[in-house]
Length: 453
Image (tube, rainbow, N blue to C red; front, side):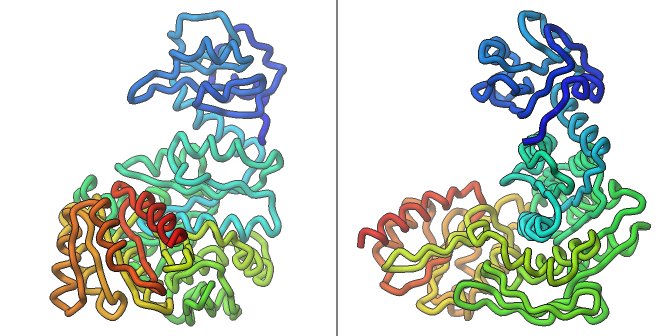
């Protein structure tokens, strides 16, 4: 873990200290008072239910240091008082990154940003001490927590930058200014909140506004919303996609039994890559990661070795063989683009193809069209399709119109009953929905029942 000198904490945040030796250090940031211990800096954040300031006494009793608002009245223990504990978290990250000259790769996109983050970190670890955003820690709270939990000698930080409203990515680039900025794709995710594709494009484009003047933008040429941003930015751009003449070109990509085999051309050099994840669409994400590696000083063979060494368990599609059937559990999130990619993976597996498609959320005015688009795309990829949830009715209706055998149920519980009555030995079952549908429960139940059968 990364240690912070308390003098730097005071200086970077403009904080006032009481009962505290600024010559000391802390070696962990936490927003959970239950983690308090000697050497832990607890950040007292306001919460939807409980304010972190209510637990400061517990932190002191456990030997920790508390960062609180300036108007916090209690002075019994070691304290750093700041204008805003949340803002101070960002100031700590920005101060440390600048003082140690840490290279930052910022990654955003409607689909694929987590995969690009994972692949880029795997590439950079071949040569550098690298930390990256943990899980879905892609916010103003998550980035500092992720970074300071990384290796003590970190030189490179891969920061996933998420957003649900305008200005959020701009704020993230202020606390972690990128040396390299990546936009994987721009699609209708968050359309319900932002109102238009142009608004989503502008919000994602904030990462280019925050890119350091001498920095590099690595952008998806195949996505026209991204391409428009890249054509307008004054920053240096390297493109990836399928067209000839791009810095990173996808020549082929094919899903095989337990990996995806792809051929890419990176800055004029061809590379054959065996990625231990499933999905032909991953070739675009690999191209982005390889371009970043080359830009930051890795030879192509070093960067390829990093991609091929990526943890197979960190794939967004979890493959579970139960003995009766095989589950392809892609339950973290869903959009029309990512659901179509998952259907392609389903098609590549031997066996009867059963697609369980749940609601895709936050599509706004694109909700009906996006769900129907998935239903039409299921033709030739799913032998049987089950739609789950109110919105998934549109998937089922569109699939039925093309001749796909498709049925609809309202809830996860109904979906489980339906599947247990109809699944056959050797079936391959895709589970795909937005996180709000809680399909991880369905995956667990099917895995449990399949292993017992």
